[in-house]
Length: 231
Image 1 (cartoon, rainbow, N blue to C red):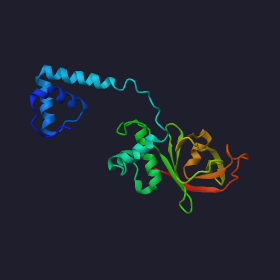
Image 2: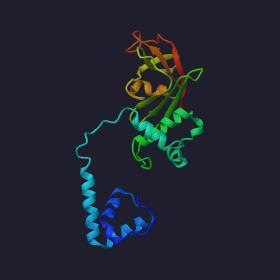
Image 3: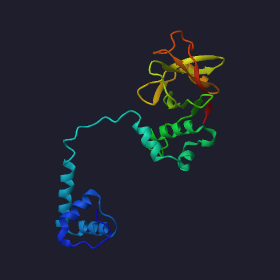
Image 4: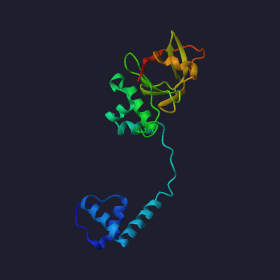
């Protein structure tokens, strides 16, 4: 890798290749960029290398990214949420658990450019935590699309059982569906008649047979529960 040094002009082909690959830095980079602007022959060398390197990936078969890759990248790229993002969202993260706050941020980033005024954002959130904190499930509701996003964050799931999500409101528990085993985030469309019940309600997850409760009521153990918070 070339660094800050004096580069002989008789090595133009190597310099052009390194510039094309982004390997230059410091004085070497400044020198090469100036040559591109002022030397047509050198600029042509760089363009030739650009075309050459671009063809190297043509024989590589496309690979579908694994489930959960976006969430992993986001968590690593944004370990501490920038204050400007939270100010734009109108959310004080102190009012949210760490898991729910992380999910709200992921959704804001996943929808697109968070600085756009029409980007949909979560209006409700919940964090369901087991008594021993062995299970944590976060949820965020985006009212613009009537979509509830639920992320299984902590805990082991049984391979021969399903986890069912329940809305607890007005003294009853209403099933919203079964959490997906394919990815960490499951999307639920909340029926119109239940949307008003979210505010002031709670969410819970229970251990159920494959496919969910066969009776319409929870039949297994309550794994975790948490109140729904208005953002």
